[in-house]
Image (cartoon, rainbow over the protein chains, first blue to last red):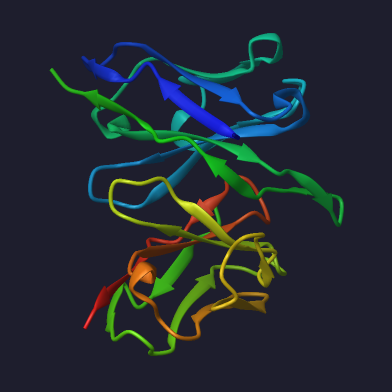
Length: 125
Length: 107
């Protein structure tokens, strides 16, 4: 069964750090881009970051640039999101998703076909 | 960043009705748009990609259309399991951006 399982969420103080993990199974992890998407309480979805199959290309939403780092370990079939200098507005459920990234008209296109169940991050004093 | 605006924000419909949700991009995104369904407490589910391509395993009740700046998700005959929130997502440029969502409720 194709599956993604997030972990690492929790309560952290403003300015603190947290590392989220996403364990993949049921597919060849190293063949896929991966992405993080978050959902703030009662609000909609926000794309956070994605990473190429070999980790050689990464993209971030502006609000997390310089604070969050996406990475992966293909030997462990795992995706990570290192979050530093956390702010109250980072409070959200964080989802990892498999990214069927493909090239069309010279640009990368993303299709998020498999999602984890999410892990909650709360930033509060 | 490209802004995605969905309308309506919510709608009420009856089982069997035809439902249309609209998504408008702040600039031309060609056909680089997907639609996702989310039920309460669950992760989003991919329905449509490249504006009109149906994801495998998704009911043919769902269809997508549009290009440029205006896009539509249509549910041909609403079923009880279709009551959910629907989001569009542009993958034309970074950062990827979602619409604010359209909640489809039971009438």
